[in-house]
Image (cartoon, rainbow, N blue to C red; front, side, top):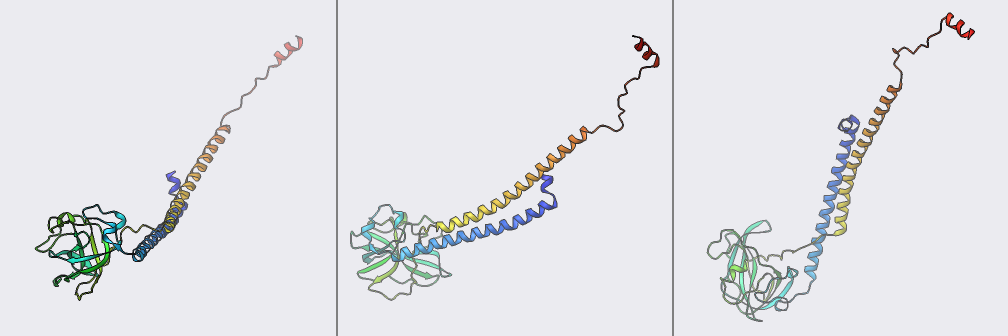
Amino acid sequence: MLRTALTPRFLGLLALVLVVGAAFVQLGRWQLGVAENSGQLAALERARTTAAVPLTDVLQPHSDFPGELSTRPVTMRGHYTDGQLLVPERRLDGRTGSWVLTPFVVDDGGATLPVVRGFVPDGADAGPPPTGTLTLAGGLAPPESPSDVPAGPGQIGSVDTSVLVNTWPGDLYNAFLFLQREEPAAATSLTRVPTPVGSTGVNWRNAAYAVQWWVFAAFALWLWWRMVREQHERSTREAAAGDTAAGDTADPGEQPAVTPVPSRGENDVREHL
């Protein structure tokens, strides 16, 4: 069958199939990108429109962080306390710098919540947090994993609550907040860090379109292989039929059998009998 596949006709068809298949694969990738973008936009819209709830209504100190609370808008009332840290090697809008992580004591229960008050470029001063009683609003996030980022004095490699629980006194929430608003508002040089979008999912209709394009690409290749196989089988049958016909044809060099003719004497004897 390989000899059949390597004929000019089928090599040309294979080249055409590969070009069409590559186009189908790219169309599938494009549809998958549309599906992911649609899912992200839907997740952003859900996060934007979800009503904020008091922190203590959805989460308690030291309890595990439920995945469905990622990006959930919450509010709380309390005050900042000592222990502000910088989380280095973070990026925002193309700039490299640090998150400013400040402990916030929630009035309802007195536990501490880590708050990312904003972003400060490398070399800039974060400044102290506002004083007095404040009302904060922002999006929740689960604690980060341990990091190997070098952390100097006043720094922490990641927002790892297993480290913070031994750094800050009192009870600690197993989560942190991306601050979006505080009241009363205070003048600050920090840039707010948008709450990262959690699990976005995909738009399944566009994902199905992507799969269809990939199936079309596979079908085109299968169809070429089927044509090659059928041509090979046809050629094999024709060759076998030709061998059979050649075997049934007599050899021209072979002499036909000759029946002996009796002599005249033998005929006379038979007539008398």
